[in-house]
Length: 246
Image (cartoon, rainbow, N blue to C red; front, side, top):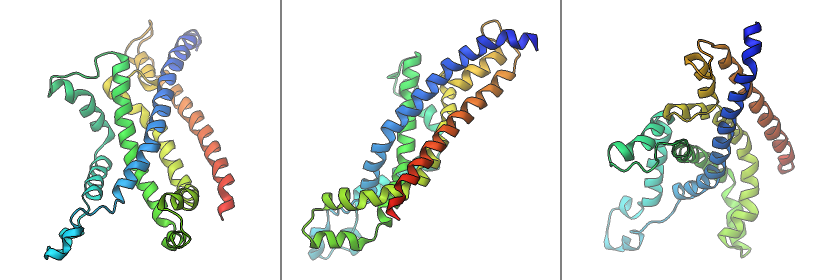
């Protein structure tokens, strides 16, 4: 016990540094994935049909109704959601250097953080896009039709009618994804990003004169629990404030 108390300041200092890296990755991911997810959702719902004008030429119905933007977007989302985030991290970080001979990320901590941020943003944007799409499509189509009758543009209908109702509907599933993101940040250690799990595991292998100690790993769980608890409270209050839509 005395040995643990002596090592405690060193461990806490190292875990704090790793947790700051975890927080940075978390907030950067949210800042990028939330707007990108909405763009992807619009792409998956795109009604653009380039061959619609050729229907009079006798082309098959499935061809004139083909929506390339929607089709490509949904395939990309399916691939990203159907493959592990860990593999996506490895591909994004190592593929440019090993296959294209163009190590765009570099080998430093900043390069690893940038690669991890790109992987996390794109991965979570695809998940968020499905939540956005479900929220938008859950709003009755009659409201859009009523807005068009009143002379509103589609953009006005979206921002003044659909968006407010969508936000209320997507808060619970979005909250689950955000809490999952907190824990998924630990996957960044696969490309040697020194987040909090990396910091805790380092004392098991040997770091700062401490080796063979597993108890620092248990302390990392406390960081995740506290941060997840704070987010749960904040997101719960947000959901309560949006109850006026009921």
